[in-house]
Image 1 (cartoon, rainbow, N blue to C red):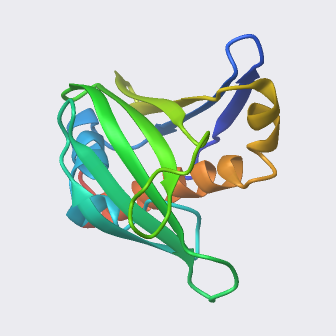
Image 2: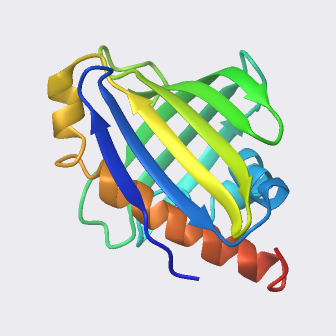
Length: 169
């Protein structure tokens, strides 16, 4: 099950691209990405907990969530995503932002995010493309933990959905 996650930076487009092939069907991957009862089990880095406060997966819909380390070492991060495009079961586009506890967006924290789910022989190829407003933010993404967080999240998604489906993808 353990598969390699690939990471690319495109400085011209200010994009961080993270890809992974997982041993689950595109439909199951879609459900994992779009249903709060599933995403709360895997979203975020290993040993972090995510709480979903709202998730309305449709253009104009909102996803409000927080993530925090299980050991209490660090602050809880509050985030709000606004869906731009939703094409089941292959593409989700949203603008993800950090917020305060009242869901007010932190200025200049917006990240344009594209999630694609492509069927491949081994299951599904998942791609997350995060576009930053400037190259400095792109370069800081790794320091901020985004690469490790997305890599861990892909591990957790695959493990959770395989377990949830009883080993049938």
